[in-house]
Length: 94
Image (cartoon, rainbow, N blue to C red; front, side, top):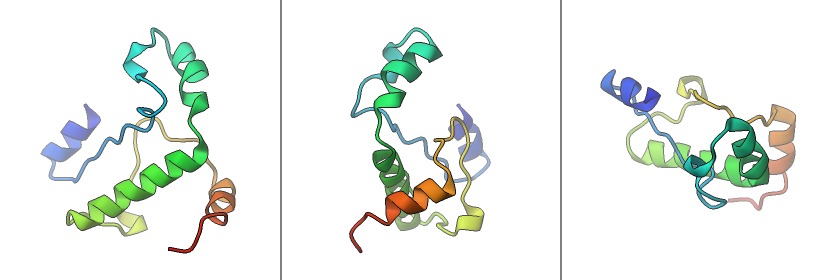
């Protein structure tokens, strides 16, 4: 819903499904159940990689990939910058 509103204002708005490989988020009856049985099972590395790939796709689709022009809304993945750097330091150079 938020993506549609932003898109109508001429933003490139993307809502990646970060949980689909672990299950169907719409199948859970409560947020607590969703968090305990699905969200907590999704590896941080997978989420960061999915977000990075989404930003790369946006750039290839004429969207801006400049960090100061990137925004994230909704439920933000709780990975702090230090943890993000630690995870990325284990990735092979691309």
